[in-house]
Amino acid sequence: MKKILLFIFLTMGLVSCSQEEVSIGFGDMSALQEAEVNYELVTVARGDVKETFSGLSVGAFPRISTDYSFAREMTINEVYFTINENIEAGELIVEFDTDLIDQEILLKEYEVDMEQIAYDEMKKAAYSPEALRIKAIDLEIVKLELDSLYEERKTYFVYAPTRGYIQQGRLIKGGKYAPMTRIFNFANNEVFNMSSYNGLKMSQYHNVQIGDKVSMDYNGGTIEAWVSYISVNQSGEGQFYFETRDQVEVGDKMLYMLYPEARFVDLIEEDVIYVPNHVLRNNIKDYVELYQDGVKRIRYVRLGTRGFDENGQMVTQIIGGLREGEEVISKRLE
Image (cartoon, rainbow, N blue to C red; front, side, top):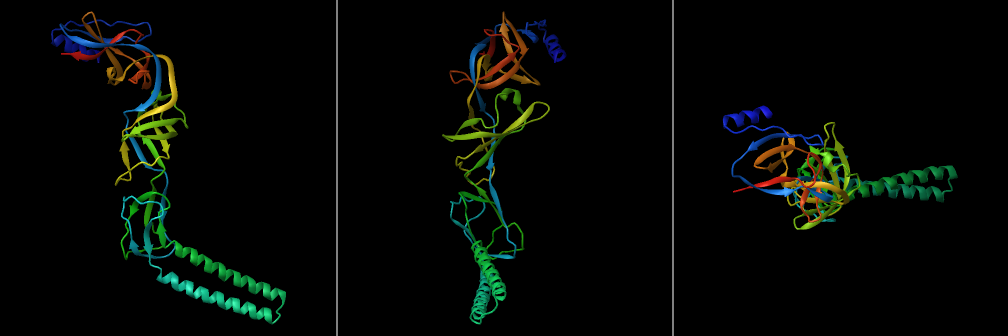
């Protein structure tokens, strides 16, 4: 980077500059003399920084989803909802043809009746206790089989267990589905997982732990969530996962992106130096620009926690590279 900048300075006929070392070990990368240029400057401040998770995209997806399949071949009799259509808890989603199982139930009811009659006749005829015990077991077995058919028939009418939507599936009236084939997937629209994109600089969130509460402002409302998982790789980059029980409107999408302003509740870095986020630059490394005595300098900095100061301004803690009271360039004034 020094060679590139030096080449630019020489070809433009400008004056090259020397490095300035600072006591905390971070030196200026370069300096550039500029004539009659004005900048708006901000001062490196000291105070408390309330941690935030802001300006980052967050994917939201159902934490609970259920596959629907059956142990026998099924035929759809009626479909009441399509994929991605919002469904309220208790609403009928799909109805399967019951002709075959109804026939099985009739046969099993007849079998139960016959077993009951046979048992009663044996009892009247004073059969031995052992014989009656065995017959009673046979009667109980067919009754249980009949109850099982009754319960299975109920599953032919699929009702939404919660508020949600059909996430995947091909529901066609009259369609036939082989045994154990996933017919559709129902997504719970009441409990969500949310995750940040991968590649966050996790050093900026070193105080965050699993279970920490987050308040996210989105679409004019507030979503409350909790950190459910944190992943970090060897390079110090990672990803947050959040869990929320708030109902989040998904419209017609099963997976979507939010851009919330998320604040970690009660996570505060006390008495640290910081700068507004908009003064930070990055070109492989993080840096700020300074302007002193007509000289513009670029200085590398080491960043800490991101958050808000007491005035609600988005700021980032400075761990190294700047001192309290120094001034950095906010923007160039025309």
